[in-house]
Structures are given as C-alpha cells and as structure tokens.
Image (cartoon, rainbow, N blue to C red):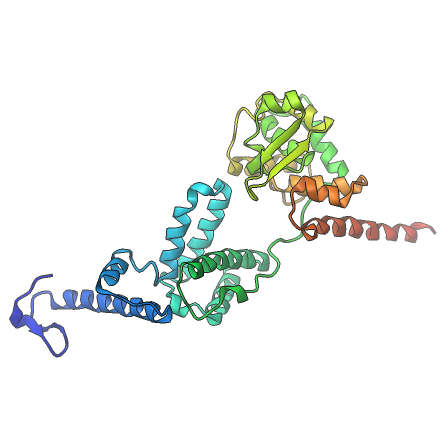
Length: 340
C-alpha cells in the first residue's frame, strides 16, 4: 500500500478522506488491525510471548491459532491421507456445517454458549439429536487437538458432553436375509446388482465393515477360508474365520474383491435392491454389520465372542445387540394373548 505522506492522518492512523481510494485502504487497515488484535488475544490467553516474527507468521498462516475454522480445515487436510475416504467425507461434512453456521469462529469465543448456539442451529436445520451429537463429537476431537497444540480458549473440551451418536440399529431378520440370499442366487437378479448384493451379504455373514471388506484379497480368502486384516477404523489386527454362507456368496460372484465400487454407489444400489424385494426398512451397507450381530445372538452366539468378531474395544458397544434381541423376546409375550 503506497500513499503520499500528506494524505496520512497521524491521529486516526488512517488515510484522510480526501486521499485517493481512502475508503478501500482504510478498510484494509481496519481488517489488519482486527486480525492483530485477535492474534494478541490468543497469545495472551495462552500466556505466550508474541514477537514481531511470530506475528508475521500468524498473519501469513491466516490466523491458524486464532480462528477455529481455519485450524479445523488445516488439520483435516493434513490428516486426510490417514483417513478412510468415508470418514474423511463425514469430517468434511461437519466442517461445511460449521462454515455455514459461522464463517469465523475465534478460539476466544469457543465457550459453553458456542456449543449451545451450534446445537440449536443444527436442530433448526432439521438435524436429529444423534446427528447433532455426532457433529459435536468431531468438533470435540478437533478442539482437543487445538488444546494439545497449546491453544487456549474459555471452554475445556473435556467438558463437552456428546450424548448418544447412534440411533436405533436397523437389522434384517432371518426371513428378510433369506429373501436377499435367495434373490442373489436366482436367475432374476441383474448382473449389475449381483456384485453389490454379494458384498452386502458377505458382510451380513461376517460382520465386516465396508472399509475392511474393500481391502480383501479374493484368492487369499478362497485359499485359506479365514481373514487376517488390520481394521481401518481401529488400526488393530483381527482374524475372522469364513463360514460356509459367506464362502458361497464369494464363490457365486467372481467380481467380489476384484471390482471395487464406491461406498456411495453401493449404498444407493442396496436401497434399490431391498425396495425391489419389498423390505421396508432404511438400509445402508452398515446395516449388514448390525444384521450379522443380531442374527449371531439370535442363533445362540456368545456375547464375548461376538465382541471379538466385531472388534469392539468395550463390551458395552456389543451389549446393544443383546438389548435388541431381548426386546424381540418381550414382544413375543403378546403371543399369550392368542391362547383364547
């Protein structure tokens, strides 16, 4: 920015109104001063010294330590290569909602009121409680990361109470699963659906997530009839034996583990398939995992062994399937009303 000395007002520290483009240049100066003030505030809260060099770096980094939105995006993109594609899309969706809520969220404004306002905003947009809680869980994760980076703000992210992040787990009962299984082996199923349904059924009989299934080697599974894999979500090593139902599904379609459709395409097509078969449930690929777990218990499977197969670190995660089966048993009590 260049101007004549006589156009400068030392009292206001701005260009005089008579100077060329004074309004534009003064606005730039106002924004710059505002940014400097925000940076100074964060450094004061963090009890760190702000030197001229550090101030220059902060301004160049678009106030990464000042604006939570900027910090969120920077860390999200930095960790992208370590995220499963589906998980990255979910995190990016949370980021997009944050930007729509407020294009700038200063760390100095991240307090209990911020959480309350954001939850209210999402509710007015029609988000369910579980969706709101899931969003807050991601935000909490990034605030915890900011805390580890030495950024201080009024709220302790540890105090953010997330709440329930999953709704009622939809699963397919044995009759519905049999209907899909029969359709898969029938002569009526279109070729473009066979691969999709094959992947889905394989998960129904193994409990594996899409992110893990997509990385399997067909020849290895056929030769060994068990799977050793590193779980994408938890990074833990896991071994699963392949039962005959899953093996039959795999053998019936030679493209399974060879051709890899996107998870978006699979979810879209599986909805069409179940609708075609008259199954009126809200279905996604993850329903296959819930289907495996509930049917495993329906058939008398052991809860601790189910925890191992699903790779749950806490038995409480697995207990939800016990509650589902128990609820079904209680519904059967109504059969007594038909005695006479």
